[in-house]
Image (cartoon, rainbow, N blue to C red; front, top):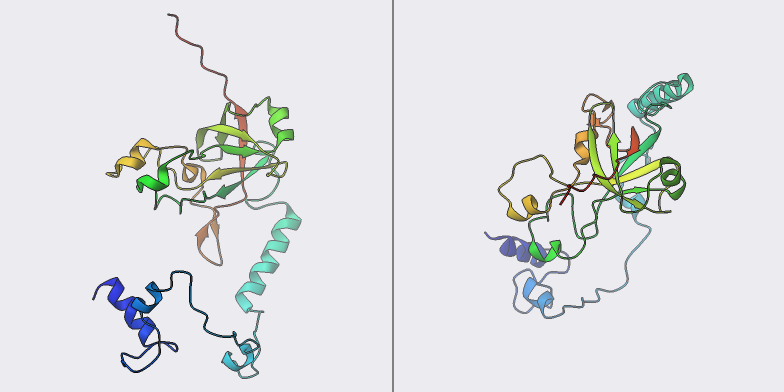
Length: 226
C-alpha cells in the first residue's frame, strides 16, 4: 500500500471517482495525470454551511467559556502592564518569525535544488530603528532575549513596522545533524531566543511571536595584520 496506491484509492472512491468500474466516467490518479492543468468539475455549490453544521440551531458558536476566561485575563494583564508583551526598556523590540518561499521551517533544507541561490537568514529591521542603532544593511547585530542571544546579519527593510524585527525560522546553528546540506547552510537559531517557560495558557504553546528582544550593533572585527 504505497502512498500512490492510497491516493488513487481516495480519488477513485470519492464523489468524482470511477469507483473501479471500467464503464464509469470518473476520476483516477492516472486520468488526472493525463490532465496536468486540471479538470473542470462543474460549478461549485455554495451556501451549504447550514446543512453541514451539527449544532441544534445550525449556527456556529464562537463564544466558548475557556476562551472568554482567557480574554478577560488578557484584558487584566494589559491593564496592569504585566505579562510577556508589556513594555520593557531593556528589551524594546518585538521579534516575529518568518519563513522563506522555498522552505518549511527546516524540513526542506536538505533538498539541493531548494537550497540554490540566496537563502536569506538576515534580521529584518525598519530603517528608523536601524538608523537609531547605527546599523547599515549587511552589518551584524546581536539579538538578545531574556534567556539567550544570537548574532545575525541585518537587512534594513520598510517591510517591518518600527519597533518590530523579524528573524527566519528553521536554521540549525548549534545543533548536530546528519543532513549534509543543513550542516553547510547553518544560520541564526531563532529558537535560542524563546523562553520555554512563557506558555500561552489556553493552547499550552510557547510564545513564539511578539516576544521582547533587544538589538545592538556588533562592531566589525578588525582584520588580522598581514
